[in-house]
Length: 196
Image (cartoon, rainbow, N blue to C red; front, side, top):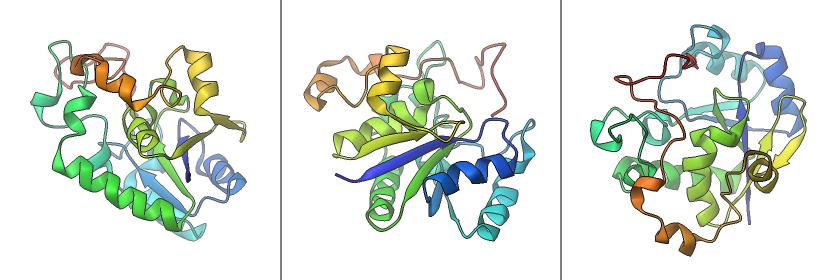
């Protein structure tokens, strides 16, 4: 079983974020944000982050087009603006992104990155992490205090189980039940949505 790390950039300074990566000897940051830019944390804009990571001897790979949580195709949203994850997983681009990610995981210490510090409601855990767990990978989440949290610990704290459930159980779910926890559609974005 291989280990996949996840990390959220939140509103950290780049220096604080680098400490999180160094704490787990991360070699590659895989950016899973659909839109790799932030009004509130421009130090994590794609080009700036890539340059900063290179100075820290960490590789950067953008896979937000393949593995992002806010797809451009309206067919992947329900009427309330939630992303229907089961539909995304059948998209050839998503499948290709997972395959590329798994090749990287076999060779490097990889951290999936998104904007949210807490992985409980983030697609890097609920979508990408679930597929990786079904493929036999273990998820470890790097938290803001540099401590690691297992997926079981995230699930216990949030009440949203993921890795401990068996893939057969997932197959029994109605496809529309496996979806984002919040509306993220640009057409129906919640009033308090973050810019991350």
